[in-house]
Length: 221
Image (cartoon, rainbow, N blue to C red):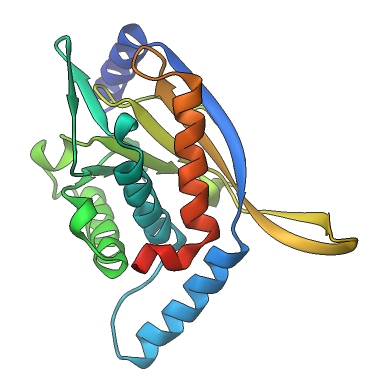
């Protein structure tokens, strides 16, 4: 596994011009939405374990659909644009890392994404996946929040134009309208291939993504 990871990472760095942009997004509304939706699912008898990662996955899918420049693959000298989103979810293992893919994530609800993220993670950790389940992604999310990492520079998966790194939630004190209040901020690290996208493109994608996170009811429209 380490040999394959090393080969993929070296190939990625050799073939691309990688740059990472960082920014934080206020997550209070997203956390409130998660709490309310989780309770409604529980009251309705739905066996869905809602996670922040699932909500972020839905937000990323919608942002990719709205700003399609980054939902591409570049292979063998050919740039292919996608309308559908095949979302990779980086999953850590004791001895490495794998990226199972949610195919056609753009057609799935928050609940379906939550269930599939958990199912794929379980399969990867139990050694039940194959190469098909680990290929074909058009964009990837890698979440290091559980490790208390704030910002990092994720490396692109071969062929993809972007990968979103998610850091740990940060509590910050801000002054708004003359009042002091505490808010929760979510740090993002977006690595992109500067051969395919300009910095302004990557910044615009993060702006669109922030819109969905700060207005989470857009996730269910």
